[in-house]
Amino acid sequence: MPPGSEAQARAFWAGLLGMSEEEKPAPLVGRGGCWFRAGPVIVHLGVEKDFAPQRKAHPAFCVRDLDALAARLAQAGYPVTWDEALPGRRRFYTADPFGNRIELIRDGDGFGQK
Image 1 (cartoon, one colour):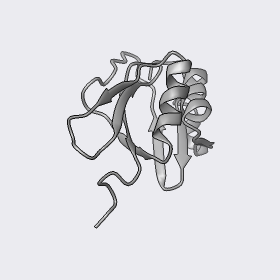
Image 2: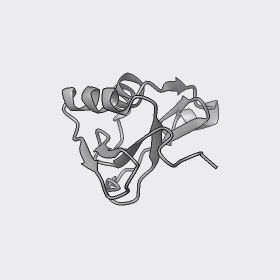
Image 3: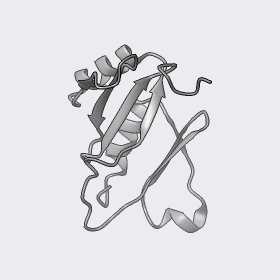
Image 4: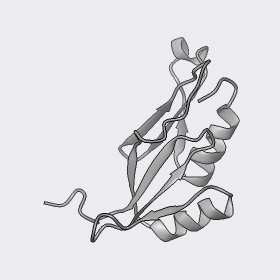
């Protein structure tokens, strides 16, 4: 993320996605950025002076209530682009406040099952 964007990151990752912010270790605090967690999922957002968003490479997260999250994101002005390319898997793409692509998949749709 761009320098000085921690408040935007908190509003998105904690406020909209419902993750908890984790305290960064003291030696890393001066570097900026934020760390977030939801269950076993941990996201570390680092700061880059010459930041460029990732529009193709992206993380994917399984979500219990995909429709509710899509509605929250849309209401907050974030893009919600549904993708039906994988039969049997409900999913959509959005972008964080910095333009990074994020995929959200309905939990149980072919992931984590044997």
